[in-house]
Image 1 (cartoon, rainbow, N blue to C red):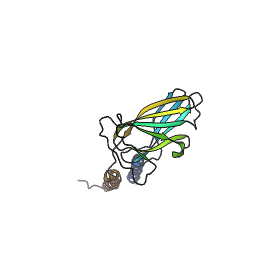
Image 2 (image 1 turned 180 degrees about the vertical axis):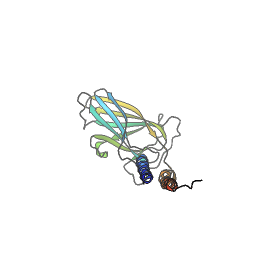
Image 3 (image 1 turned 135 degrees about the vertical axis):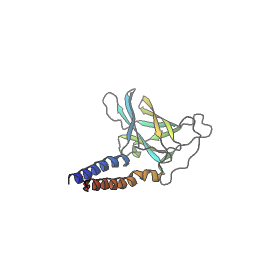
Image 4 (image 1 turned 60 degrees about the vertical axis):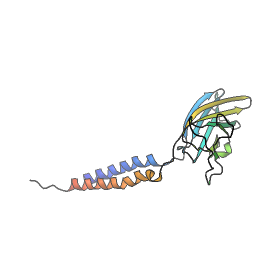
Length: 198
């Protein structure tokens, strides 16, 4: 009875530990937070930024002296692709007409893209956001430009853009879990079976 309880407890603990690792969070992650000029600027991205899929890039702008969120600032993003990447114009992602697909304009020397961030594009109305479709994997440079009245500031940080996961590779933990539980059950049964004494 004790070994059955131990096996069930171990299985429950493993299930608890494995599932959160692979569940996709809908919350963003903080990339950078710095005091710049009269503002405190915080940059957020989607929890997973992948090449070819729309990702949410957002900024919280606060007054440095009071931490009050500014709701009437003008915010824009300047995005620079990874160094050494080959420029290409990607097609917009189907079903995501609101996302901005980054590309390069002909004659652009530094290959930068500028995007306006708006509060209307964010589910959290304290944030200025823009959905962005990154056509290349690698470390993109983001410069958040903030202007409020006569005051302005900017914050630069890196956005790591990964390759899309293969669908089968993403299922491996879920396919391995039942096999692991069967192995635990088998071990439990062997331990419970009395061994003949010689």
